[in-house]
Image 1 (cartoon, rainbow, N blue to C red):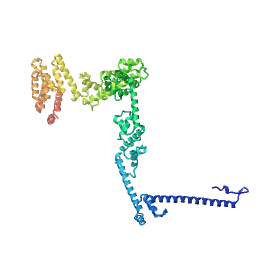
Image 2: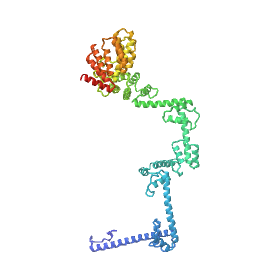
Image 3: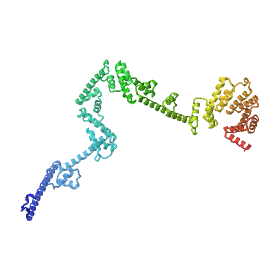
Image 4: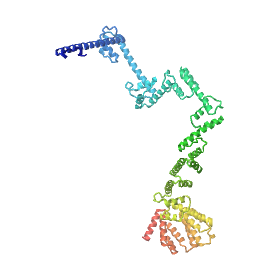
Length: 620
């Protein structure tokens, strides 16, 4: 509304009295409009209530009740019943009082129906839970989203992303998997015109058939008949169309790969799958090649192998950065080089010359780096490099790998020879241990290095290895030259190598065949010392006495006898023999060292203490 049509002007200005008259007119009209509108709405509401009451009376068989006013108690009672609200005793008594018997029956039937429907819903939910693997979800079906989602699955409707998120959030992974399958089943039914089929559960036979159709796999006769029996004629037609297309494809493949002389044109023939493999750029298996050979399809094999080699050559050219090389035929010499490179990691001289002439130097660099990495891996595994590998590293200026190999091998040898805790430098001790490993004798300079570090006097593994080599050398020299003075020398080294048995074997001679008394004495002394090493003191003493007979002026037999009696714990007598040795030229300090050596090597701890106490009393 507007004041404009009520405004009057007097000389261009609105007069004040007339202004108030206009306001009164407008207000009166507004009141009449609102009043009319409210009366109209009240009328509609009243009419709706009357119609609703009439419908309820009809539903609950109370049409004989005369009062149709919405203010009626009956209207109130029927509205409560229709909303599922329990009636009170007063309300039941009122219905009885007004003899609304049929209405009471109708109300009871409605309540029973509701109760039964409630049970039906609960039972159906339980069945769906079991079917769709959702039994661990124990929330009431009335307040859970699960019921609605399961009904979606049962009816074949697609589940939404929100449904999937809800299932995951509630730990219903198995249900979610089934839901994904139901979704796929529904999509396949639409794709292959089978939507009229009601069952959407993944275990359905139709689902298995549709999955095979989607992979263009052949259906069995029973599966095809199943489609026909279930009136899925359009789906069956799609399958037949697929089969025709596959037959056409099979014919094209036979032409393409020269396999037409094979007379089995059925899609179940192994040839169809083999030709599909070839066309899909897959390498043939040994069994497939054997089958083709049995069918005498040599042309097909040749084509497949050439395609395979071409693919391999292409991949190798990319790997070794030779894509600019024009010849892509597998008959190319470059293909042979790259194949060999894949197998051996090392290029031959002819291969290198071929690559240099064609300016394919990147291949050489890659090959060299690959070979260097192979040698590093070999070193890491604790393996030794051979001479040709070391020469290659030197020629290619990879001294860093040589040093690495030496350091790794040095650590291994230190562990082997029990020197891991000694701070030995690489040179010369690595060279020493390598020589020992190769069974090569040490140069005098290297022996001096061992002596300076006291590695020969400590009786460790490196000393044993050195003495064994020397024992073997002098024994071989004796057999080579016949020089019998090599016998006591070799025997001495065998004893130091902790192999007295070998010393005894070597000195087991008929000394009557030897003329030189000094030699016979020396052999007897070293043999007696070997017996002593083996705790055979009786035979040791016999040898010492024979040595004295052969050469009475030599101090060595007397020194041996002194040691024997110290071993017997007869220290005074041992001292007697040591003094006899000194009289015959033995140095007192050497005899003193010998006493210490005997005490130190005594295995019996009590005897060792006993000998030590004797020496302390004799000379504190």
